[in-house]
Image (cartoon, rainbow, N blue to C red; front, side, top):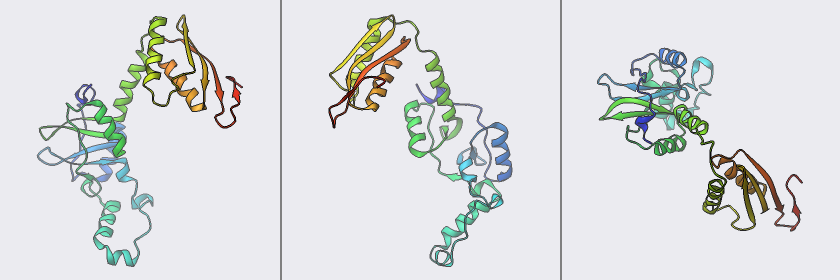
Length: 234
């Protein structure tokens, strides 16, 4: 799946000269966490987000004034920080050179960018012009659709094969000592595991198998240190 299939094409933008107060009102009115900033030619100049407005003098979050030593050694950095916390226009607070994607970017790559860069929204550029925005909310929408649209009908054999395949591909999963039986789309797990995390993960695999209605956990936990065994629920 690519970004073009999911992005919001009706993106709202502001100019570098837009007042910070107006940008904040636009974000609140449209319930968005950030706005692309376009120059007069329509090219992406930056992005202004809620995070850019967290430190502001008006609400007392601009922090303590820099001491004389830092002001003397790093006057440019101190001045830039003052601009960011006091600027009246978006140009003074926006993030320059923002990360962006194209309509053809794979959805997985866009999601990884958001996670790695700790950002909520990505401008989508085509030939240097803004054509949309993709956000974490958009990714949640597709996730919700996939969760809701999980096939309800599946044979016991296909469920068994799915679970065994997932366990075989999981490096953490015990490769022996597990028994999986499926009857009437109800999964029964038995055998041994060596941590509560393993139990939860094996259950998770079983619950995610398409068509499963419920999972019965009969796994026995064996403490690696003492060798003592504890039945499910014990």
